[in-house]
Each structure stands twice: as C-alpha cells, then as structure tokens.
Image (cartoon, rainbow, N blue to C red; front, side):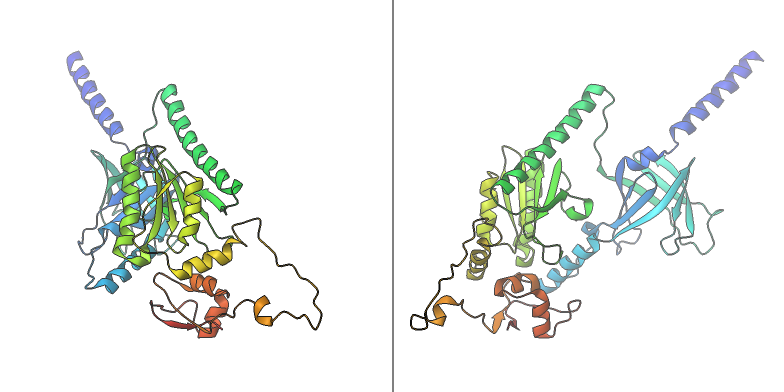
Length: 388
C-alpha cells in the first residue's frame, strides 16, 4: 500500500511540475517581439509586442507582396508601406493563469479571451469559446520570436557590464551632439529613437538619436538626421546598406549616410538637405560621407548659401546702412536682392517644404498661390508651380 501511495505521489508531482513549467507569465510575453503569420498568404503578417498591460500590434510590411508593374507603382507601394509602418494599435490586456484577456479592436469596452500555452520557443493563443461571444472572429494565433531582446544576465557582474556598455554608447552620441552645437551646427530637439522612428529599418543599433537640422516645430518642414552606434561592424554595415539601397531603388527615398567604422558610428541624413551642409556634420563627427549617386544641384547650393549665413552660422553678416544724399543715390538694383522668379520647376525628390525653402516663401503661401489642398495634392518632377 505504501509503494502505491509513493507511486501516485510521484506521478502527481511530475504532472504538477510539467504544468508549472508550461505556465506563461508576463515576462514571457515581454521577452520578445513576436510575429503572427497570416493564415491567408495574400495578407501580411503582424508584429506583436507586450508591455506590462499593453499589447502593440503593427503590420510586418516586409511580408507584403509587391504587385507593381512599373517604377511608379513600385514607388507608390513604398510610400504606402511607410504609411502602414506608422500604424500601431495599442490594446489593453491582462494575463491570469493561462488566460489572456485582450481589448477588442472594434469595441474598447469588449474583450476577446485566449488560452495561452508554450510550444518550444513559440506562444500559442487559442480562442476560449466559452468566454467569447458568438460574434467574435477570434482565430488561433501562433506567435514566433521576431526580434529577441537582449537576455538579462543572472550575475551582477554581467548586468553591470551590459549596463555600462549601453551607457557608454549613449554617452558617445551625446558627445557628438555637443560637438555639433559647439561648431554652431543645428541640433534641434534631439531624442532617443523609437520603434516608429526606425520604421522597417534594422533595429540592431545599441543606441540611436534623432534630431532636426531645421529649427521648426512643424513636422512637415523638419529635416532629420539619425545618429546610431553599434556593437559590431556587421550590424552597422547592414543598416547602412538598408538606407543606401533605398536611394538606389528610388531618388525619392534617397538619404545620405556617413560612417566611422572604427568607432562603429553611423549617421543618416534626410536626402533633401544640401550636400554641403551634410559634409559639415560628417566632418565635425569624423565620419566618412558615402558618395552620393546624384550630383548636388545648383538649386541646393543656392538654398544652402542663402541659409548658411542665417541659420547655421552665428556670425551672419548684416548690411550696414549709410546715409546717402539725393545726388549720390546708389542704383536701386545694387542694394536690393534679385526678385524671386514667378514660376519654378519641381525638382527630383522635392515636396512643398523644400520648394518653399528654395524660393524663399512659406509653405502656406505656396499652397495659396497654386490653389493646392494641403491634404490632397500630387507633385511630380518637372511640374511648374507659381511662387509669386
């Protein structure tokens, strides 16, 4: 009888340990970003991540299949992907035992229930038919690790080493930003990059900052630069290649890149910026600027030369007014700037903010002169716009 009791106890213990080992905790949800593959091949996959109580859902644009038949359609798809990348749904959730309750995407006051289990490295979410409404369209989800976050080392020394390494990377970027400001280069509202700032670019950087090179709070007129540092050269080269390849596929997606492979630092600039300005930042940070596949246009040089004295230099020269007699009057043409042309041609890669800056008028004035709806317009290289 005693042997039978011991046997039953042993079996019960093994069953209990197996059940506990399969229990999903909040830490398991937060351990990775997850990808949920679509059952329909025509639909894109979804990327899912968890915080303590919020589930974020976005579209994996890399899984979207192209149906473009020419370069214009391909360009349209790229713009659509960039817009989709900005879409990120935030849903409240709670995890009790092995049941997860997730806020409904269509009704904030309704919830969908799933039973959560582990399957190797994957998480399996099975709809709980007893708790869900009949109208629920909940489907079984298999979450696979997408981008693993760095494991937290168990030892104190390893934790300190990881923390110190991250702090060193952030300090390196802060020092570069200070160098820019000391050389009178604009660094407007620098901040840490978010997942939305990366878009579909690789997120392998150890530390990353983003800031505008134009002092304006209007996001449409801001022209940003990204400053990133890495753990290894392979990650740096992969990220640089991503930005460079975009520019090769389409001039509209071109951006400048500059690197210091010894320091594992990469800087990426908005492609609408004048190359002369980009070179100033690259030189200040001891970065090697990647050769551009496009020649710097005359318009860019003119834009930069006119703004260089006012925006990027603290020692701008001011005209000195001298009294003149009526008999010694200087010809009007010699003291007044040349009038802006009445019309201009849209150049490759330009939008309203760049055109307005080039011709010296506000974006609002450009819209007004051309009867453009700010929320509904299309511009193509070669189009003629009225600027006066």
